[in-house]
Length: 248
Image (cartoon, rainbow, N blue to C red; front, side, top):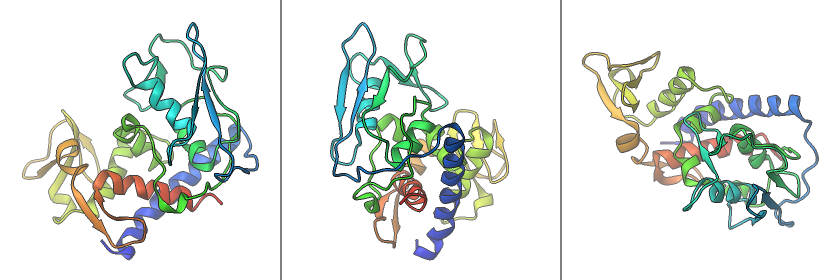
């Protein structure tokens, strides 16, 4: 794929991220971002009766995402990522600001991700952290693999069928066949064409399974910081590029 072919996909992500940021600002105005990588944020998960756990940034996985990974994974997770791609408590309790908080303003990437994951938002910013240009911001594996999270990031945080059709449109750019000749199967009984989501594939169409065929499929994008990756990784890089263009 050339940079010219990639451009409309990035534009879709850019528009989506701008809409998400607008919704965040209606909830809480952005503050100035001054960390830029020079200061190390610490995110605390306080979930009694366990003592508070504090998490620091590890490589390009910011402390906010390290905390999500630890709290929704491991041997005894206290939270989980639900089918809608939101972080929820396993005991059904609401996750409050006293349960999940960061000691510094969030960078622009964490601001978007925390909002989309429906976690308590601290001080939001449109700040660009050091090394953001590499498009290697890291999220937990369960977040990375969530179709619901990815599609809402590409559709202004709106899920459902419309978001799945946006995903199909993005996948179309990497297909070697006409987009109308195939459907994307997201789950059993969920088939996405260019115009609709149905419980069975239309006749005489190729079915492309998202988990086993589409997401892991290798693609080559001739653009700086993209290169050769799986389709899933490439789509996430498109999201990161969309955020990059909306932060500074």
